[in-house]
Image (cartoon, rainbow, N blue to C red; front, top):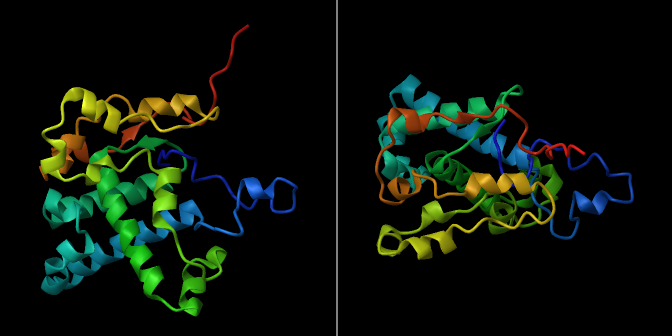
Length: 227
């Protein structure tokens, strides 16, 4: 299970019949179900790499820069395929929680962006087939990112990021506002992820940086207060 700013494994429809259903779904401005959205994006990437490997399709391989506009700068097809596999495996592992570094987040961002573009260019019927809960309405990707990603600093251009002093970078990476819910999640955005500068500067990951980091406990459980 992958750790995000909010728990993507909660069922937002579980309180549909209760007075608090608005807490989980905004009928006026809906978002796709987070797990479904991320699952479909990573599943598509898995299919793509299987097609490339199975058919040795040079054409698809040459399109990686279009399909993964940010992640393709981080390494070859082997690296991207490995990231895809690790993320999909981590997403569907129901026993262990995993945190992602900037390499994982950058790749996932491109996967999500691809399905957003697909959804946006489809007609209403196709949209409803892809994400029934959206009822054909427009998908606000920025809203989704703000709600579930800790930040998207990894997208900043190197010419803007590299001249920053430590204080400026600290401001850039300030902890997201979790309100009174799950304050313990702040530790996942502090301090600066050592992979951030490498992703921004398009440096391929080391083998150990490809791995998701397992956690020993559920990050969304509030710590017990001992009286």
